[in-house]
Amino acid sequence: MAKKGILITGGSGLVGAYSVGMLLDRGERPVVFDVALNERLLSVVGVDTSKVTLIRGDMADLPALISAIRDHDCDRIIHLAAFLGEEVQRRPYSGVRLNFMGTINVFEAARLEHVSRVIFPSSGTVYLGSIGEGIKKIDESIPVNPPSVYAATKASCEFMGQAYAKRYGFEFICLRYVGGLYGPSPAGLKATREIAIQEMIRAAVKGQAAQIKWPYGPAEILYGKDAAKATVLAALKDQFKDKLFHIGNGDMVSGDDIIMAIQNRFPGSAIEIIKASNPMPYPETRLASDFSRAKEQLGYEPDYPIDLAVADGATLKQLENL
Ligand SMILES: NC(=O)c1ccc[n+]([C@@H]2O[C@H](COP(=O)([O-])OP(=O)(O)OC[C@H]3O[C@@H](n4cnc5c(N)ncnc54)[C@H](O)[C@@H]3O)[C@@H](O)[C@H]2O)c1
Image (cartoon, rainbow, N blue to C red; front, top):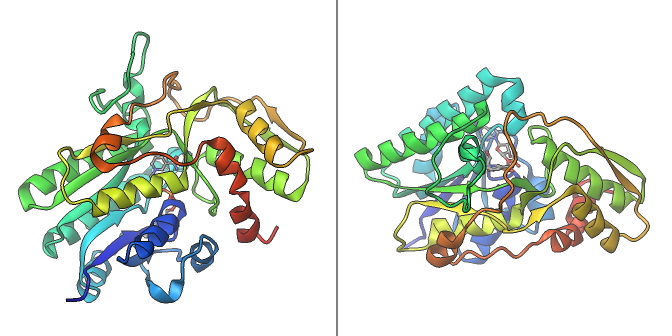
C-alpha cells in the first residue's frame, strides 16, 4: 500500500524546507502547502523537489487545504505557516487572522478529513509573561502568560488545538520552539533577531564590514535544522506520553558570542553590534529552557550550537548567490 502523505503548511520556509528533506530521507511522502512556494530554498537545503508534491496554497483557503489533504491522501499535518514575532506586533489584525484563523482552518481540515495527527509549532514566548525572579527551571509546567499579540496567537492555538483534538479525535502535538529560531531563509516576515543573525552571516560570507542592531541580552537561539529535527521526530514517532514539548538548544548566547563564532569561521570579518531598544514588550529569560521531556520521549538532541550553525553559512551563500 502507498505511504500516506504528510501535509506541511509553510513547507518551503526555514523549518519547513529542512523538515521536507528529513522526511524524504526517511522514506516519507511530504506534501508542501505554501502561499509563497520557495523551490529555491528547498533545493538549496538539498531537497530533490521532483520527489515532493508542491502546492501553492493559502491556509486562509479552507477548501484548498481540504483538497490538498484529500487529493494527496495525507493523514498527518505539520502546520508551520505563520506570521512571525514583530511582524504580528506591527500588523496585529493580519497576524491574528493568519495565525489564529488560519490555524483553525487547519484544525477544521484535520477534523473533516480524519487526519490522525497535527503537529503545531508554538513558541517559547507563550510563557514569557510568567518569567520573573526566582524561576529556577523553564519546563512545560511553567504557566502560559503571553505578553505579545504574536505570543497570544500561539497560546490561543495551543488551547484550541487541545480542544479540537479532544473532541474530534486527532492527536495534537505542540512543540514550543524556544528562543530565536534562525537560519537561511527569506527574512520578510521574520523576527528582528533572526534577521540580525542572518545579516551578520551574510556580511561575513561577503567579506564586508557591518554594523548590526542587537537589542538583546544573552538568550537561547535555535537553528532551523534542529527545530526541523524535533518536528520530524514528533510527526513520525509512534508512541510517546506527552503532547507538549519544549524544543531548545540549551545554550544562552549573546550577540558577542555570535560574532566570535562568525570570526572563528570567517577570520577577518568586521561585524559590530550597535545597541538598540527591544521591539518586543517582554523581559528576556535568563535561563535556557529545559527540553529533557523532548529528549526522553522524542529522542530529540540539538546538533547545532552557534559555531556549527555559523559554519553552515554556505547555505545562505548559495541561497542568495553571494
Ligand atoms: N522564528 C522564530 O523565532 C520562531 C520561534 C518559535 C516558533 N516559531 C514558529 O515556527 C514556525 C515556522 O517558522 P519558520 O521560521 O520556518 O518560518 P518561515 O517564515 O521561514 O516559514 C513560514 C512559511 O509559511 C508560509 N506562509 C505564510 N503565510 C502562509 C499562508 N497564509 N498559507 C500558507 N503558507 C503561508 C511562508 O510563505 C513561509 O514559507 C512558525 O509557525 C513560527 O511561528 C518561530
